[in-house]
Image (tube, rainbow, N blue to C red; front, side, top):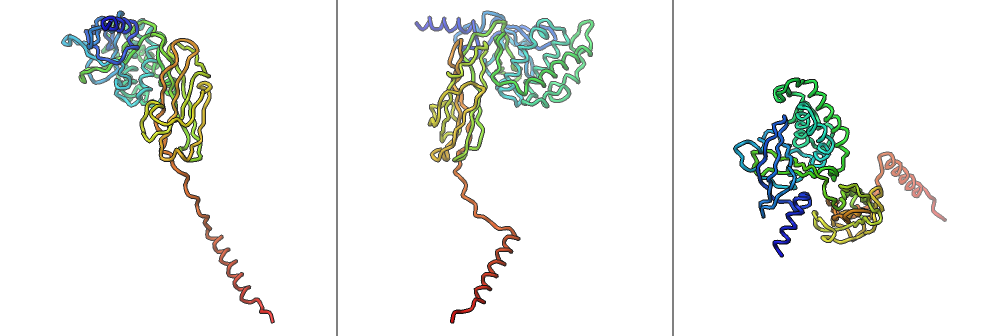
Length: 369
């Protein structure tokens, strides 16, 4: 029975590596010699049981800078941690950087890498370095003249050693990429995933070598939808907080608005990952990701942290997705004490004059006979 389960697990991993749990893989990576730090592996295997990572070639492209690519001749087997996510990104962009890399490869793999010129491939390399090292979630951080990538400072003819290579073509290529990234990435949802290619971020286990984006030319398996919730407002008794979220599905399966559910949760813990780890104080259907849900903070919530948790539901395909909770808001504060009214200088002088006049009148009032 155990052997059967391992066989099914291996088959699933080969068909859709992104569905398998994060794990160590290793194997030879052959340098492609195409003016970008890319290599291809047909022999990556899971260290745990030796199962193949994929039954199709895995393309690996460097996303680091100032470290070595992991496919020189003296490295018999590269070693990676799969599903590394933001851990494979040296810049400060986190999940936004991971989504940005997937978007870039989704949009430009065919035109710039697979069918592109030497100048375009070199430009794509710089764009990946930009996202892996310099991008911080803002358009201003995408700068071809600053940071670690800096394609504007490179003479492409020193790297693309083929007749007809021109600096002008390289400038056009990287300008196109950088303009598109500045226009799109700051508002790109952090849950963006390709619906065309199976992709992953690999963290190199040896710090001397680069982290990689891995791409397999296979439509990714249809996976459950994702939600990216947020909570806004003042966590204070009597105040209102508002929950919202972004819905995403890698096969564009539409959301089922009545099936997507929310929970407002309180907890003394400043870091929970599930509504089951706290007290549910409000729940229901979200009505879709174009709607918001509000909650009025109660006296019983004082000193607790507030969370907004969402479980996305799709109309078609695998569903529901996993529940996701926001970062903590709070802790909830009690109402501030009512301020004692104060008088300004002129009001105080007027009051003193009035009191003086009242006292004088009292003194002068004649006594009854």
